[in-house]
Image (cartoon, rainbow, N blue to C red; front, side, top):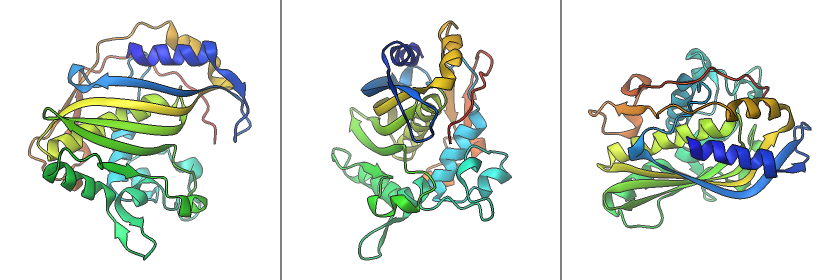
Length: 265
């Protein structure tokens, strides 16, 4: 994960001081990109511990089309609690809703994820394998507008590549989680379409380090990375909707201790 550490160092050294919605303050850069060859290991950060249960649980929650935190809380995952309605647990039409039930102007619902998976299988060379979470008509109804806004798959030489565009990226807390999540999604979609996982490409709009994460970033940058772990999936699963957490195993994950940092809400 040297690529990530170099990106973190770039923001730390070259980021421009910028205000933000939360009032915390950031150092920010605009327009960066990193790439990960998924055949070389699973890109899970080793210079601090990443909470795997939350990565896997959140992704499966998105895939299920859910927008209520209740299933996450039942699984012991609290990463969305700060934004949920305290009484109902609702978050509005966020990622899962847009991925699986995009509302068209005529009221028709579009299952973008299923559509793309079917297209990959039937027309792999298409340049339209896109899923968008940025539905401008309902942004104001969302508890938090999508940060990772759009992703596109591409098939080349029997390998499935995925590029994510992230409009807003918290490099210390969010980005390591996002890298793991979309790399995992690429593996899941590759399996159900009979392909090998290729590259995950992460493209950033506003890439920022919060001012109250500076000390933590310096701590992380002096740590030596370990070798990447490997991902193992239950090969019997053939539908994206059938994956459960026990079908997903990360092997050989050696990591430095977790680094606590406050989240900006």
